[in-house]
Length: 307
Ligand code: GYE
Image 1 (cartoon, rainbow, N blue to C red):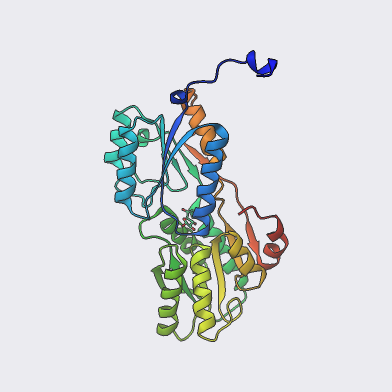
Image 2 (tube, rainbow, N blue to C red; image 1 turned 30 degrees about the vertical axis):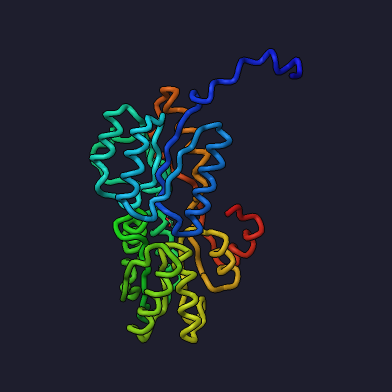
């Protein structure tokens, strides 16, 4: 071995590596894929032993994964709760086992905030407001009734609840803006396509689609085109996330406005893991930074997008 290496302290034995158990929601969207990659890459870069599970959008699978991490005595558990409710029991089990829990991406509605160290993620209500504000501005001089259809995210999930709330809060300032149909598309392309087809069948005049993520908007765009209509012109489209395929559709004028939601939470999560293990006090809420993009802005930003 080179001389320099021999003076370095012996590497920590493999079992001394920090073990992080991460219970992921699923693989439902482009956002989720980027989020998973970010977590895996950052854990590797931090030298952590990552135990990763995919719950296929089912809470029971996530609870099972968390219980197995408790049994394996991992150092820290992190997860993105698929829905907001129903976590107190398993979080209490982790607490009793002395294993700190970090929430990423989605929140829980537990009133006992001592059940987790911090929640790292976006402000979904604000994202909904940004979507609504663009619409309010766009139609500020119009006297016509504007019919909006909404594709909601996974029922009971924080982003679906909050993006709906923020949007409604802002659009109610203009009585002409009316949500005429609202249904879940489970954050997937397939469901977005299916539900948009039924919206188109049931409603003669649809002016605007508000989709809680790009993937559902992309599925809906196919349904709109199949119905002989022009997405972005005949039906104005707003979505949330800003993944590559969403940006491409926006740069083609098929999505008119995208509210960004940053999936690259890995580095902040690994930092929080380190801080918790070092016994530092960390903020109970860590909000990620994000922007908004019109079609033109999306076109300009596309070459530099990381996900
Ligand atoms: O917007 C969607 C994904 O929780 C913020 O989940 C995340 C959402 C994201 O399926 O595409």
